[in-house]
Amino acid sequence: MMLDLLITGGTVIPVDEEGSVYDPGLVAIKGQEILYVGPAGEGLPADWKARRVIKAENKLVLPGLVNGHTHAAMVLFRGYADDLVLQEWLENKIWPLESKLSAEAVYWGTLLAIGEMLLAGITAFADMYFFPDAIAQAVAEAGIRAAIAPGLIGVSPDAAVRLREAIGFCQEWNGAADGRITTMLGPHAPYTCSPEYLAQSLAAARDLEVGIHIHLAETETEIKQIKDQYGVSPIAYLCQQDLNNLHILAAHCVHLEEADIDLLAQNNIHVVHNPGSNLKLASGIAPLPQLLGAGVLVALGTDGAASNNNLDILEEARLAALIHKGYSGQPTVIPAAEALKMATANGAAALGLAETCGRLQAGMKADLIIVDREQPHLYPRFNPLSALIYSARSSDVDTVIVDGKIVVEGGELCTLDREKIMYMVESHAQKLLR
Ligand code: NI
Image 1 (cartoon, rainbow, N blue to C red):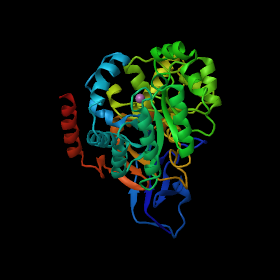
Image 2 (image 1 turned 135 degrees about the vertical axis):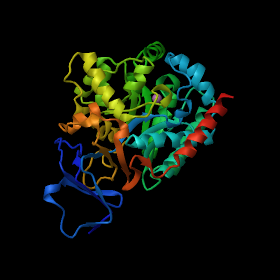
Image 3 (image 1 turned 60 degrees about the vertical axis):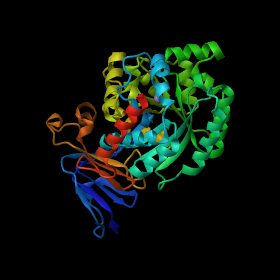
Image 4 (image 1 turned 135 degrees about the horizontal axis):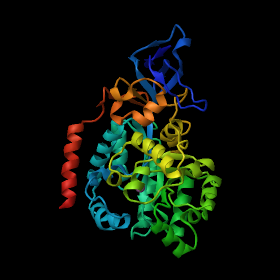
């Protein structure tokens, strides 16, 4: 058997149900897939040879991180409008600039975001934005994995046309780039989508066999507006729809009543927690321990870079682990293993890719990262999960592999021209201000 890649000598954290750690461990990759993960001691069959061996002594080997909710091209607005309340930020700052966006600007913005995410060990992301063809083009070229949802604003005058275009996008791109690209529909939020428009979007998603990506219960303003208008919470508003056979990714879910948490659990809605964005926009603190306690699957997201202001899931994992300890007064909530699971396996599940990536397991796609532990802030070498969640920095990521291909090596991008991308983003961002 000829392998394409063999990773030896590292501390392997597969993120499995048993909480295994193989130190040292082995990961064998053939083509796009993982063929073997396990302790080094057992060794591989004698006739297995590898075209390439990566020696990972004093490094951590783990599944790639997953960004469960972002608007990648919003890196174009990073640092443009900070320290504002959400509605003012959106209506007076972001929406006027977004109205001037072009496919070309979204393409370059998305490439910059992908470069930033790959360097931070993110191998897959869920995106909701405009000009989805430009997003898909960038994803195809960069070698990352993504679930792309065209953003749908039901209250806009061209909402029906946009839904038709989004359906066409899903038909064209779902499964493209060797399966690295999957698609969803992105009805933006309850306050921008009427029940009728939401019903049309959900029916289309069911026909296409794609998921739904929606913002839900993000701010108190939203809760009040939906209650005033429809007499129910945003969660109940969504759950009044027929959700049978639909995969739902719901970003935020910050303001919840007990009945809402039950509805999320009953309807198997995948929640994406965005602690950095929720803090920055003062949206509130999601009841994460309660959600997990009710059996809701929770992943982590950065949201757009205009409200974060970076795309760093390791940082979100640490924020999640710290905020909920402080907020609940219980240092035992969200231990390191839970935070890592949210950042990997749960993220993949939120994207509808639970059987594809997010864990290191034979038969799954080879999406994994190698983190350098030879750093002062990572000594001495006790618990590797603690090191990762409480001490590591995303800049410690050395190697990133997606779909069996090396896309970051020695902390450098292999598939993207970072100088050109930074230059193009700067010029497009300046153009939007004119
Ligand atoms: Ni968002």
